[in-house]
Amino acid sequence: MTERPKTPEVRLEYMTSAAVLDGDFDKAILPIGATEFHGPHLPFGTDSIGAETICEALARALGKTLVLPTVTYGVSHNHMSFPWTVSVRPDTLMYLVRDIAESLIANGIRKLIFVTAHDGNLPPAEGAARLLHQEHGISVALMDGWQGRARKALAGTQWDIDPDHGGQSELSIVLYGAPETARPELATAEPRQNMDVPVEVIGHFGDTVPKGYSGDGTAASAEEGKAACQALVDQVVPFLRELEENGWKRGSFMSGISE
Image (cartoon, rainbow, N blue to C red; front, side):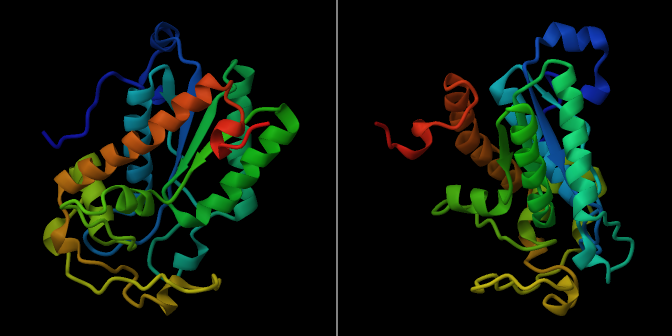
């Protein structure tokens, strides 16, 4: 089976208050996506679908973890040259994420995980996490770069996860998470983007990737999406359990250095 699991239900927007109480949730995870052009074969919500799919898998594996409604707008100004991309300012996203987290704190949740599936969201999400620690004394677990993490975890296997925007891996995660939204028959085999540059240069994505997407989408599959998702669970969940054992705080268990 390569269909994304739907049970147990862990998504707040689909649960009644009684169901939330019965779940005895002590942690919450926030998927942070984007609304941007990914080519003719992928939906504008590709990053949101990816983040939500990964968050649900993590929550089910962890237990007692509530998945919040996905933030579907991200910092996508560098994609604005492509049609129907919708972007928010970095400070807008930072304050939105902080406001969401403070609502959770008001409900007794002090263990938070942010998962962003779009690289432009990382600095605002990290900024929000730092403010939450500074102002409320809580530690926030922050995960980004799912493609790179899955690529590393699956190296040497049959799965060749690409880091491209709108490429093989993003189509694969959508085929696994929300196949009804994709048009795989429109995918084409494009060159992979070279990302090995010594410094980050801010500018429009279309200046480096003229079509607005890259990678071989024809090689995508729901099986690959499932494998990538499981690889992330296998990598992230043991660390989060260790974090739990250490009071959800940074500690020497992370560095291996102790007095």
